[in-house]
Amino acid sequence: MTETTPTTPGSLDGVVVLDLSRVLAGPYAAQMLADLGATVIKIENPRDPDVSRGFPPYLTDGDEEFSAYYAQYNRGKLGVGLDLATSEGKEVLKDLVRSADILIENFRPGTMEKLGIGYDVLREVNPTLVYTAISGYGQTGSRSRRPAFDNTAQAAGGLWSMNGYPGLPPVRVGVTIGDLSATLFAVVGTLAALRHAEATGEGQLVDVAQVDSILALTETAVVDYTVTDKVASPAGNEHVWVRPYELFDCADGQVFFGAYTDKLWRASCELFGTPEFADDPEIDTMRKRFDPEVYERRVKPIVVAWLADRTKAELEELAGEVVPLTVIKTIGEVVDDPGTAERDMIVSADYGALGTLRMFGQPIKLSATPATPARTANRLAEHADRVLAELAGYDEARITALRKAGVLP
Image (cartoon, rainbow, N blue to C red; front, side, top):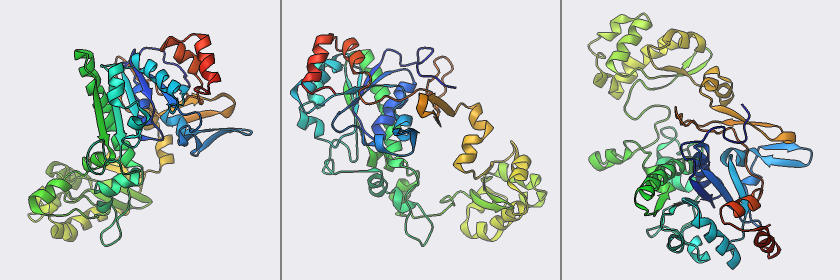
């Protein structure tokens, strides 16, 4: 599927978003809103554009190249170049804010205030504005001005200390989960604030911190500590207390097997031809199988024997829709899996001579107003004239004057 413009209005049709953010957490949040039908305007400093434009991999045509990383997180946006360090640039932003519903930025707290265009200033321009600020430590607190990256959040939020294998140094989660978690919480907060603004005319500041977002993903670690003083530590591929629920070897690779409930355990015993284990008094209940000593001595050897001599294909065929058994797939296998295509989770965008970019789709499936993720990303400042004319009401002479003054590229 190749598509550059939505064929039907999305659920956020008519919502205007100004995206001042860079790299991942902010751009991805804005991209999700664009997928869902919002008009998203990517505003970049023409002298210092989004650094992710230089991130690999690249679509190439001779000497021309375009970042696929940038394209995936900025699809469906309109591009404007604007120097916010100039007084004229600030005024242009304010004119755009008057017609906007949402503004998203992920600068270090204090940056927008230093420029003279922080939330307190912009809400005077547009009282209904939803101003979403994503940062490392949040807009308040003694740590708010500290610089932060994804690894900062994984470290300061506790997740890094919990990941890896027992007895070995902690391991960061392999994707930028600090950014990605902040993205998702920012989208939820933004949409909640937008609903309030539409109902009351009152905008607000949506403050999302990467560190806070990571902490909210640590599952039972917080209550384990506050209730029992237990400090979470790396557990490898095992769950902290759910068993069996981990990676197991099979004849040609690895699978996840997670039949930990009494119903699933009994079904597994029948499925693998050992029904006697379902009623074994030492392992016949979930609570008994959760015991670490019992699990290692009795339960795990049973599961290992069930799986070791069977191939991945045999196991998936055998388990079917009965028990949770899943092949551990490479990303290539996931992309090429027919099930992925059935869910429209790989979409294509046509970049002309640069080629076609296949990227992940939109996991939110709406029956009446489907998302439109299969769209191209903006070139730097590509849509400036159109945006300024339609949203700010500028005529050609005004736009030309701004360009001559160096406010626009």
